[in-house]
Length: 135
Image 1 (cartoon, rainbow, N blue to C red):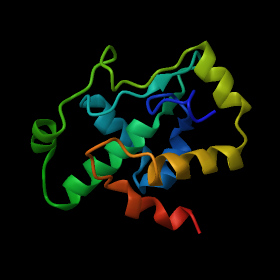
Image 2 (cartoon, rainbow, N blue to C red; image 1 turned 90 degrees about the horizontal axis):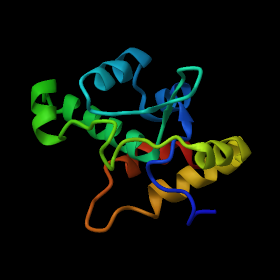
Image 3 (spheres, one colour; image 1 turned 45 degrees about the vertical axis):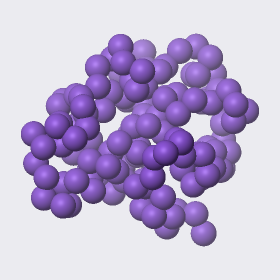
């Protein structure tokens, strides 16, 4: 299944993303308003986030903690629009796979993606941040 799952596939509701990133729903919505993340929306208008979204939120959090403001973050992390490659994808196939995953399968998939399958040439900021969830 790991070959079928892409990093921008919509998997996580906002509650899980809040726990993973230690950000509030308000902060996450604020970053979305500024175009720094683009979560997918279900037919019921629920936000669903991808691995890329979680990673980007942790990058934003790290920059905020270093004292960078939103304007500076926009310079470092270019805003995303819904048509870009980094936008979260929600289609029939990804929705079926998301519903098939149990919490434990999703947890294992998240761990594997975040700790082992980083993008070539990119150091993951979230590896240490999320290690507390995987004991």
